[in-house]
Amino acid sequence: MSEQEATFINFEDGDAVELGTLPGGTEAQLRIVDAKTGTSQKGSGDFLMIRMEIVNEPYMKDISHVIMFPDGNQDDKSNNNRKLGMKQFRAAFDIASGGFNTNELIGKTAWAVLNEKDDPEYGKQNRVKNWVAGK
Image (cartoon, rainbow, N blue to C red):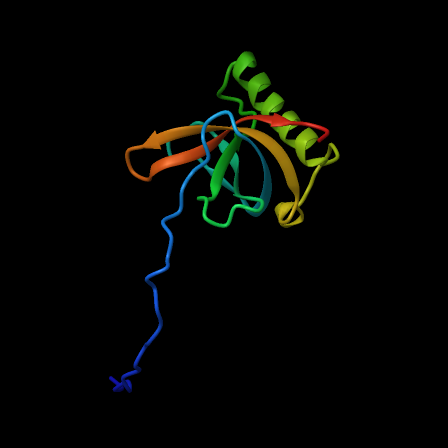
């Protein structure tokens, strides 16, 4: 095992700010900073997970948003709601119908009305209540 040389670290952190949330009902511009697909561990199917930042709000927490894909194990109404969620997302971010690469989403912006929820694990979080298309 090699021995590492100690490094002295010196910087001020007294002005660090705890990240917050915006009040529910706030309309905010969001920018996608990460997008990836996954499969639910609860058996509800595949999904697109989007992480967004609030534009011009450097001290607000990032917002996560999940869009579930239609699945053969769901009923027609559930699958329609999943399709509708993707349709609304595409309209807000001006994404053409058809296939897209998740990397193409990074940097895209859209407007949304936010909810504010208190999560037992992460504290207060903003969530997308609804997208504002065409803004």
